Length: 161
Image (tube, rainbow, N blue to C red):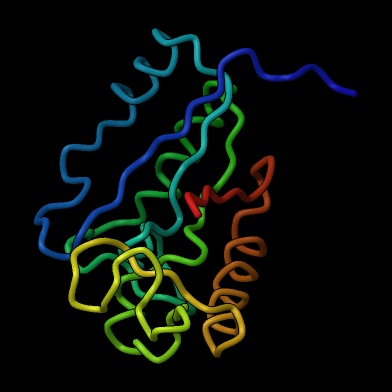
């Protein structure tokens, strides 16, 4: 077995379409310096968050409407330049963009309530049923990311359910 990374960071952000100017202040050199200062040698970087938006160019999803460049690629390149290993995070089971378009794909309890929230209009993230067309959508998104970003140590996702 190879040497395990000493310090792994999960760069966590979930950004609504209501937030303007996504990534406009991204500075590659500053990002690299912060990783060095923190002695980070492995990091999870977002492809897609719980709101459903991609942070890169995509044909299988939609890039965040307020992001004007490929943030994922810029972050990956910055990490690789300084020898920081990368994994790509894809939110699986939570996607508010798709939930609004397809509430019929959501996980339902016996009483027809939806997941954690009780009903579709309650604030929170909404869980998807994998025995619905959602499975095909997320599978295509994962395949695209796996094929497009082969320079990483893998794909990851974090579930809180």
